[in-house]
Length: 238
Image (cartoon, rainbow, N blue to C red; front, top):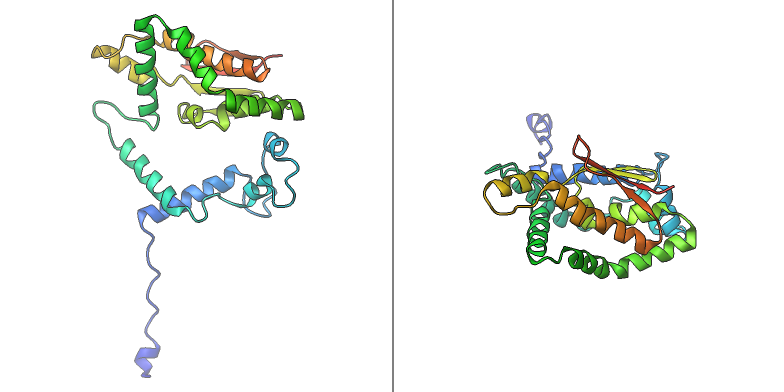
């Protein structure tokens, strides 16, 4: 081998593509949300420990503290991130959010129920369809005595709620989020697509559903009106 060849610098490491960088970032966020990497002193919140108690050293709670949960599913995560980018790039005729399709589905359904005079029946039907999950959560609450499981089950572990309430803030005994229907409902009223107001969506749909879920769990909650800051707060009742 020549001296020149021996002194040739090593090729620079390959640069990560955008999708790879996003996957890496998302997995780190998942780690942080699950309590941090091994040895960081983190861990799952108390309600997770209560739900996963008795699982042994390889219980779900232990796995959540040391795993992103996406090992072997990197393509699934990458595709989801790509869809998020595609959705958020859509700014016409308004800035689309990740809950856009869910919001429109709710508005369409509630508008139909309002026009047919059967909103209360529709809410009752929604609560009925949730009974398999609600009864399972109720059993956990009765077994552990941990009422926080009610809020965690309704919001934190239910995709239909945390995908709807994008800025959900989690505190012990309390959940706060921006009322999710305002932007799309306002634009839709302007073009004659829907005539529902924020107050109607809250009083006829969102609030009675949340109260109904909590009632099925046997855990009373308070659901606030829409605040001046367009926020709604849900708390465990004293």
